Image 1: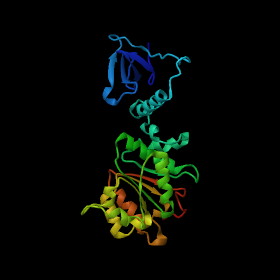
Image 2: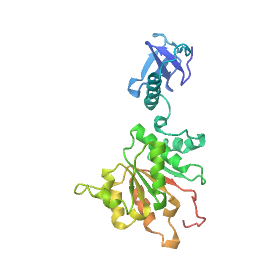
Image 3: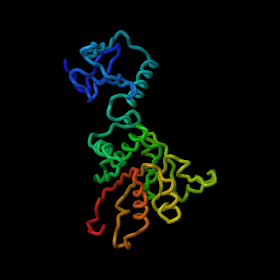
Image 4: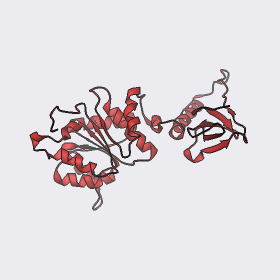
Amino acid sequence: MTYTVGSLVKARGREWVVLPDSTDDLLVLRPLGGSDDEIAGIYIPLEPVTPATFDLPDPSQVGDYRSARLLRDAVRLGFRSSAGPFRSFARVGFEPRPYQLVPLLMALKLDPIRLLVADDVGIGKTIEAGLIARELLDRGEIERLAVLCPPPLAEQWQSELRDKFHIEAELVLPSTAARLERNLSLGESLFERHPFVIVSMDYIKSDRRREEFKRACPEFVIVDEAHTCAYGAERGGHHQRFEMVRGLAQNPNRHIVLVTATPHSGKEEA
């Protein structure tokens, strides 16, 4: 019998998911709800493998609230390390629309991630960028995150990250920077102390703050309203926002996602 990728089988007294490297005789399997460390190969001519079956729910065994909640929590935790394609889905507070997964799929094919998300207004660019960040965090590929945005959008980003992605980010604004720096150790940057930050582009673009941010910048950066950082002749070209983003991009290992609804101004020099 041939088992397709993603099908469920039973062997060695437990259920498994068939992985892509399987052949007709050799199945590469991951335990259902297990981790990559438990992946095993089973040679079908030597070991019995059967399709996995599960009993239908029994209406006479209703259970109780605690049991249902325990099952729900187990399923959510299992999603994070199971054979599903996205580990972040157990940590987001909404159901993404199918088109919002496209930037995530594209990002996971890049190393480092250098991506421009230029959907129209109202499509959900914040969600698309946040999904990439949440997925990398849950995969353990990044530990810190910075969002660079215009000051009026900072609180909106903070609430979106908190409510939709369970990421508690600090606001780095002229009104909050002094408080955040108050308890820092000698030589420590607030960007090293706080793993998740939302930074006002106008605050951080000055030469002194820009150099500090470049030194302690997280490994994943989202730049909102990225068109305001474009190279433009009307400002003499090398304006501060452009220099900021260009400096961050010089690190070959840093992931950068640019977000804008205006990917091009129509000017050839931009």
